Length: 212
Image 1 (tube, rainbow, N blue to C red):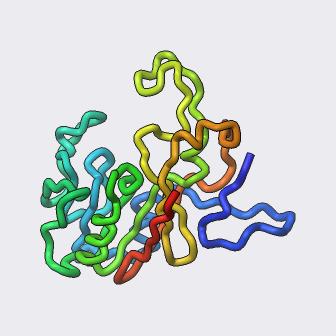
Image 2: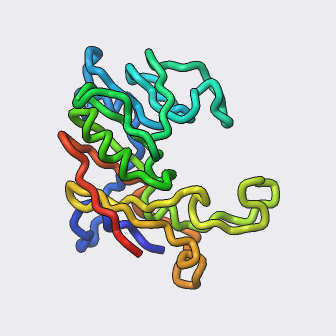
């Protein structure tokens, strides 16, 4: 077992157990970041899991929530904009939005860097979450009833392309190297560290791509 020490916190050195971060609910996001009803809020990539309590002005994704393959649902945001943000710039003015939400999206993208730059451009501040690096290395059990994995054991989610690690006020983008993860060094079956990477930013997202 290992614990995640890559969240901008100092490594735990005492005998006391530190409190792990948990996924924030919508009400906790509203409270923590002092979101107001008048705020112009954009959600990037949220069609598969729409925010229920946050008043989203614009939802941006490749597919509409009504067409989502898992749990299609009516659009809750005021507006929907279709955009392939791995290739296209977001069709908004500079700093048009007061707040930008991007939850469990950038780890899926072949090219997340255009989106990171564009979120910095269109919003004054925002909040990004991804699975933690540790949780996304834990191997799935063999389950022949699961059409995604079947008889294969997969490290984390097999469609994820990046580990996202928080280092102070910066996030590091690390390629998810599957051949390396299948070696004997990475046969993790349990994780006791942080379940999520959570990153709040203002004005600009500070990130670094880590090369293999």
